[in-house]
Image (cartoon, rainbow, N blue to C red):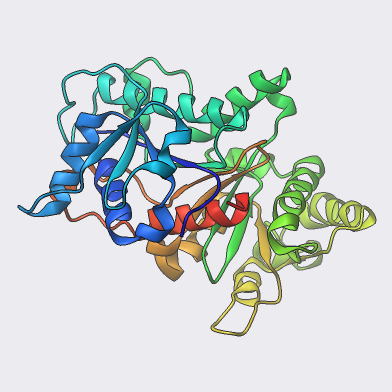
Length: 345
């Protein structure tokens, strides 16, 4: 199966499991990865391919000069575009500035290619935040880096390119009002404007994927969604007004519902669809725990609000097992599949 548009997979932190799971994805899902290419470093990817080979001959890495060449690479080869200067391999399982710089430069290259329309989507292998900081990268992770690149491309302030995190699996999708912040700050981040913005971004992102308006369930912030104000008034004063404004704009939004039941109502089980296509959660753990509990190997992180499609596996760099050939590529394979679906490639 030949996909019409190339899809870029960034190397991730080369001291972690990124190169291994990329090689495993090309080995285990050859039809899905046909036409994909890796943005990274040949030495690091070859090391990862050898790690999963378990003493056998690893998949060969084929160097390409542009994304257009990816489709012409023979089967059972991994196309790689050398996006960084050749250099000594960073040591496995260790935080290093060199590894952080390689990882960041690969994402920057792929983001700019996606914004120019040269690739259909990008899938990002895991970064390590400490390594980014050691390299002097001013962004703590993928989301902030991609948001800044998109803002620069569009000629807008970063504040005018709002993004949200969606974690998705076959059973459940959740979108977060706030992402990485202290819980006390996350409560303050629940405002009518932030909830309404999240609902709009969610609607706009899933509309083309589903071919219809997504059914959005909204989780309350407090136990029992505040119980009519007995356990907090955020639902009455902040969340319900946002839901009503969204419904006035034609969005299919319902809630807020008790957080301890809304995810079960939205969960798809077998051939039985959930009551909602997605749940908007008020803070990080509220939305991520349910999806991860259902199976972290199938979870996919999607950045919504960008003028490009970006997905990633729902796990980290796993320095403790890097180079041992034990890393599971299932989440990366699902991230590639999701990127294909969302980009229509």
